[in-house]
Amino acid sequence: MKIFAIDDEPKALRVLCRAIAEAAPDAELREFERPADMIAAVEGGETPDVLFSDADMPEMSGVELAKTLKLRCPMLNVVFATGYDDYMRDALNLHASGYLKKPITAEDVRAELENLRHPVRPSPHRVRFQCFGNFEVYIDGHPVTFRREKTKEYLAYLVDRETMCTGAEIAVALWEDDVNASYLRTLRKDLIDTFTAAGCADILINAWQRQGVQADLVDCDYYDWKKGKPWAINAYRGEYMTQYSWAELTHGKLEKQA
Image (tube, rainbow, N blue to C red; front, side, top):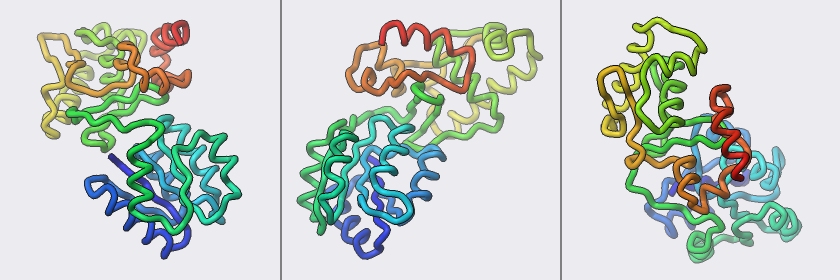
């Protein structure tokens, strides 16, 4: 579980983080004093499961911060930790998971984590594909960077198709015409090398002139959506691999069934 905590007052932030650390010693905890830094972390690819946020901050209110983060993390559990009742109605409108009054104790935090609006799903899989919104790739919760930018789109197509694909098929989808075969081999090698270096090469299926993804070895919101899992159905907000035009075909199918 990854937890983000924010308070513009350092002393209050220390109290909050001590309570979180005591209540959830195995969680990955990151603390922030400025909303802009937290937003930058999420835009950089981090995906918190739970946000503990002060409601009244000078740079940006906790409510506005939560709204901004939920655009990228729809299943984010928001727990307000504040000394005021003024934001209670806003929290209800935001469908926050909880609303705690300062000073925060470990017992308070533990109770909220045991009753999250969106329970955090434990998973044995190290690799996760996010298809709703922008396509993103994570290993052990961290965003993956490939040597070549086009490799990510190459992988996205394999994930979308969920079957073995030839280089020619990928080329038509990504470039709408033929492409240099050596460039495709470079992307394929970059993909294999990246997952091999991370110890996750088993998620790729490699055959002569064909490649695919081992769907049962990864977490993927789109795959879980197709299985009818409630969390994935709730996570779909009308966007699918938005940075790729060729994904509109699948997007259209999702819209018809949404």
